[in-house]
Length: 483
Image (cartoon, rainbow, N blue to C red; front, side, top):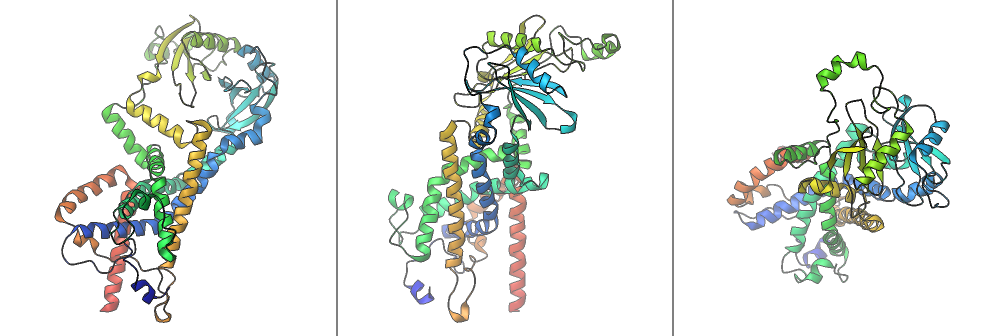
């Protein structure tokens, strides 16, 4: 579009501004937000695009698992009576004798299979999970799993978290999560606070694009209005993603330490067990006599799982549970609820199978508020907290973020000068030096706030510093050319 046509249109508040006005004013804040939103969008948007695309794929892992592994995850017909775990475990061990029995997970649904998890040295941190029909003890097959996840889910999880690039790849997802909330916040302020020369500041003007607009204004309307609808979901994904990221997650852990916000730890030590010093001194006399058939390298007997399950059920643990045998004679069995769908159940108990009693009990109600929010946030982020509704919402947010990103780049292209003597591939960047127009109170509050953010979100601080260095370098080069 020609510059003549553009000059007859109302001022586009999200377009790159000209030189900053003289003097400090609130317009300086707006100009700085425009510049921040623009540069963050240009450089960080590719990370957001990839995170949204891989997250969209991960959202459908329950359906993918059922499609790929349904013959192992489900039984054809649900029976009336579930066989004892001991019979199911014996069937699994007969078919797969290699490895050590690590845990057993009861069926998640009436037509689900029991999962007998084996630690196999050659699989490293992965495990072999054997799927057994709980009604007939028929072995349905096995899969190499990672913390209970199927191969497909593990692959997609790795893709979303680190693009299969290991620790280095995790930086991409943390950069995306660190900047996402800031880009969204700046965009909301710019769109809601746009000048009165644009559409009226009504709810309709904020929530819906102007379909009568054309060119860059039309694209901006769809970009901004969609961003408003997505804002709450994007803030949620950013916050929950950061809680288990590498660097920001460590900072979050330090905050939980300071306010004692961690989930309570289950005491797995048996009350009458010898102290660690006594256990070390008596080890050579204890030999391999495991506690109630387990521990010290001897695999737990199948019947022990039945006793542990019955004791936990009597203590009130219902639904799907994971039973883990003791690591040694001084510790008890751990039985933990693994119901991640709302209303969640996360009670866990330590069981002394020799006495048939619970020695320690951690209830979901015992969790501090921050620990509960963190736990629920992770499940919501993964799309399991509210079942299919959770999946649909996440899918819509991911698709929306992809569209917003594409529209953002389209606006940048549409703003390019098209005159023959001033042609360019993209639009002009916002003017430099906007920070000089910020009111002094904003600087007094803003600078410490940015430093605090840089501490809490290290990758945000590092990339922001990189933006500043890049901006200063560009300014010096241009100044040298003019000179």
